[in-house]
Image (cartoon, rainbow, N blue to C red; front, side, top):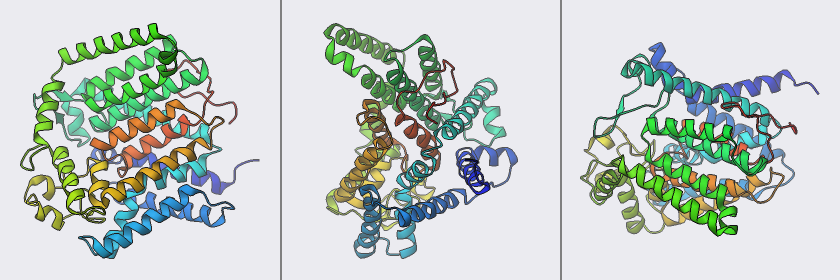
Length: 427
């Protein structure tokens, strides 16, 4: 049955806006003018309307729907009764933003469940543009950053970090997840890695090293352990070989990098609110809030989130005068800390329950009921939530959505190509 104009318009509209959301800052920088300033809000409202329409017409109510609605109601009520920000508009908007990842993923799952090929094509374009960007960044250096008005990212040792049209952490996240996709396809298809698979993994790792992202290395490790897990359990020799290879690789990596010293410095900085490691400061404050405001936190729009400007919480901890909080620079880099601070122990358990049933919902679209690589994806995603705003930042969310949808489709046939995702015969 041919598509209606409405369907085509909605397909192009959603995927087009998602693409623009990922590369919005680069496009705006190149044009020299603000570009779709309210794009994130437009997308969130559109997805909420689509979801509400689906839920009203659904013949069966799924647990994940009820949990999302319950968390929103809980967030609003607890925040207005006990939170530091009693502004109803701030509380309602921030409560929706805190659910943004789940809302957007559910929308794309429900709307594109029979259009997986289209989502794969979208991912191909996003991936291709990202790689072109990092190649241009590598070739032209900081001239690239100046042209697109992208901040130059450097480590404390003055080493330049490359990210192309994305920031280095976002680019590293994309490549780590792409390695996960490659391993998932190999596992579902033949169960082993071909030369083409290793080429994709090697190229992705090279880009991750260019970004100088430590989190991505650990994310990749989750996927490799999951890929080989069944073999490791069945074969002691292979387990020993895998352990030796990983140990040697880790020692070589540590020998030629300053990762350990940086980690120790960051860890030490996390124990003081006067340090210059903002992620450590935010996690430190979140843990203190959990104790001081047990078990419900300080409420929505009060800590480590977009609408937490001039929050009394920052005044209470004596950090409101610091540039991080005045400029909102890095204060919502930890999705885990933001949720923990605003909702406390109950909130983090509540959100964990949502993610658990989200995984079950994902598996309901799959032809199998057990997917060890999907478990690895959730582990990597949760790990990233410690140091990145993966739950509320549109770029991370729209980089994640095609990846989550790809993981629930086992049995894909490998095309042997580096960039492009093969089409499923079922679609």
